[in-house]
Image (tube, rainbow, N blue to C red; front, side):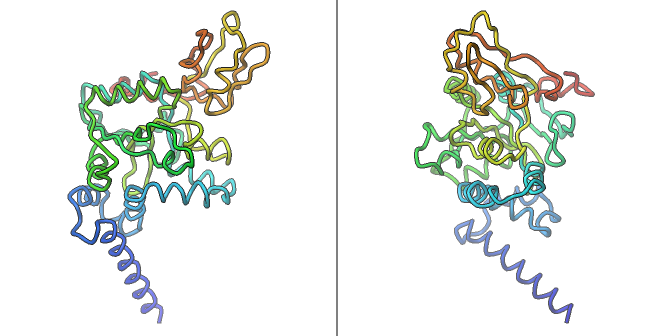
Length: 313
């Protein structure tokens, strides 16, 4: 009897996987990028369904984000929130750190980033030089009633992710030259948006994207600020106020996506919630803010220093 139950369950799982793949591929044979994703993930991940999870995330990202931010995260307890953060998290990048990823001059091998990414899983970085970059529609912005523009600002980095996005979202994605990628990063920085390197363990345990996040739309920021999901790691810097230059205009308070600044007679940065993104620095009209290195905030993710062994920040 038990053997029959196991056999039926296994058959049901296989049938579910097949239906998901075929529907996602528009009832055609698997596309080349899907095969490459499957090969890189390996058989084990498909037997335990994490490969299917990764496929669903990449194929139906908007629906996936909608499910989590509107239905799952609000119902999670502390353990569930920590589990989610461990399996899908990001590291804030300063502007120059984000640009360094796009302009690397040599290959970065597989490397454990446990000193940089303070989470239990998905801390690997693999990049070729120059990295392959594809811009695609931000699912977080696309979900909102009032969509921040432009919305094609998420950046898939490296194979097989880039080809997967292009093949499965051809109407809302485009390959970028290095110059175009840098221009996108700089334009988003000027708009007051946060650069974040994203890591996820579904399908492949490693870095896969740079998102350019606005505080009003980003599901990651909403999950952290509104629901307390600790899924965003600081850049390793904090904002510092020069009180002799600050005129208490309130621009930085309005601009901070993490709610880390209050303004009374002068701007005050709350150390605990500051993620060191540099948005306030860019937006301050009086140049009264700057980013300063703070070892208590962890090590920066600076690819220019990953060639050293061990990383020396």
